[in-house]
Length: 278
View (tube, rainbow, N blue to C red):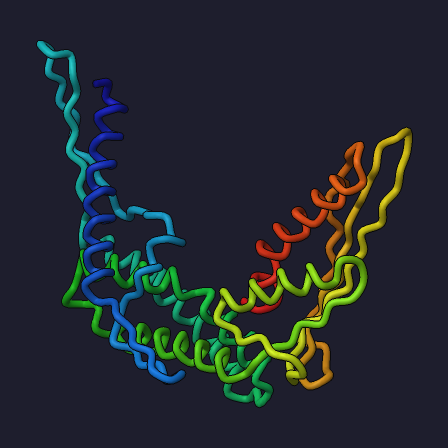
């Protein structure tokens, strides 16, 4: 191995250790119960904390390289300074804590349920980083993480509050324009998968206006779909957004329609929850 390859192998070993350690802590501490829409949290760390956060190592140091002249290989030892690492991790954790609590504060003065859901989703955008950094700090300095226990508890309580609000407050989907039934079905499926209850005549509505204009030129069919989405809470629009999709073309009209609907479905799956309800 070259010196650079030896250094990479060393840091890879540390990274693997931390990944396995955090994962084992995640599984050891995470379980949640649900009964009749009542949620109780019995965990400090949730299992999805690793899926959305890539492993970042802090305060990594290397020993001087040693070259085995006979085998023509370098050896290097990588190590982490625990005190230095905890200082960096706790600072990052405190920063995310501040952002989370600021966003959570907005909920206290809000009476509208849908807006509470939106604010909770916004606050919980910090959840993965908070949980990941907490698990990380437990590895390097388990005796110093107690001050963050209340934060982790609050994050889990917020997650359970969000699940409860979603289940107790149904959302209606109203679709108009081209292929309205197909669009309504797609959105209802997305909402259901994300913990919402979909029903008719709810106070909370997701309105969708879609257009699939078909044009033909030189025997080729073209379609550039557009969709306008706006969310209502008790007849008040709380958010809205328009999307212009990529132009689709085909020699057959049904083919271009199928391609356009598929593109619309992909867009809604990718953007609906992120843009409006997360």
